[in-house]
Image (cartoon, rainbow, N blue to C red; front, side, top):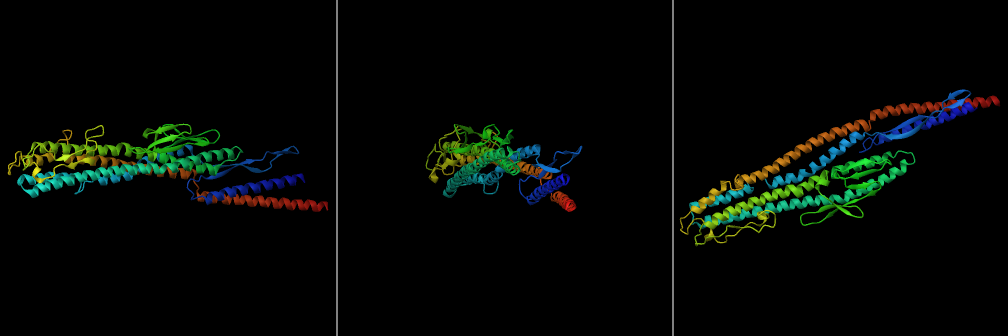
Length: 464
């Protein structure tokens, strides 16, 4: 009877093992469309053989472990490229909006500048005409208003980028805490000898999201936990403890810092990656450079116009008057804040200095002013119109490069994700083949149990 009993146990373990194989395969099929799910498989091992009457008799099969498919090298590539994609994609919308602000259409700032100097040309034809003089003041006001609007738009853009940054911080801190909790669960589960496959899938998905947002890097410890850090090495998760990012409001935008429980560390753009690096670059470097160029344009235009106007004479005999007023600089350059503060200082049409004397037909100053439109007065290389075109071109080049980078990185990510799916994803065809194979094994195990049961009945009937 011991031989039949052993055969019965062998059939039982075989049946249970094939049931496990079917369960794991069914779980794979059920999660075929689950994002971040890694295909699972059962590692089988034979039960140690038993010495029976001088022979080593096998005692069947048992599942050793359930493994998840994983390609560490491929995951590393995806995380690296995902960080670069996050950096570039975060800049796409703000750059497109900057292009719309500095458009090259018929009603842009260059057109306002041209109309302003064209009004001086019209004044040179009729230097004592009140309508022409009033047009100069009106076009000067329209020009200053355009500078104001563009400066305000740049300020709004900077604030929107800053708000986009700060709005993501709470979500990031939640994910960091979730990773610390996953670390604890994975350690607890795997210390008992069982693989925490579902928790590892969940943790990997969070790591990929954080790489897109912050450009984070991670490495696994011997206990199965992962440490997460910024590209500069500042820690975000250390085993089972998560630290938090904070935004500190300042006059120039929120400054990031990392709360390390007992101390805080500043987080600058060199410490960041992903979306945050792209947004901080726009807020702290690119937009301020564009604003500085706009201020430089406004300052040089006002300064050159004022120099000519102060050297001329109005119909009322006034002289030495500035046409524009600009605020005192509060920055490193004399033009800082000029675009936001430029104003028409002349209030009376008679004060418009069309001539170099108060004679009614004197148009010499108006001619000089009209000629100023095409004079290369900015850095000795640019007229007002060409300098504005340079600003627009810089934005256009940055936007075009960004679009190319986003397109290329998206294609690369698609290829990497397809490659990962082919290696660790679920193939329905493969799972169906496995299911049929395991079903046949299950049926054979059940048949073995039925046969052994009939044999035991036969033996018992003999004894009776």
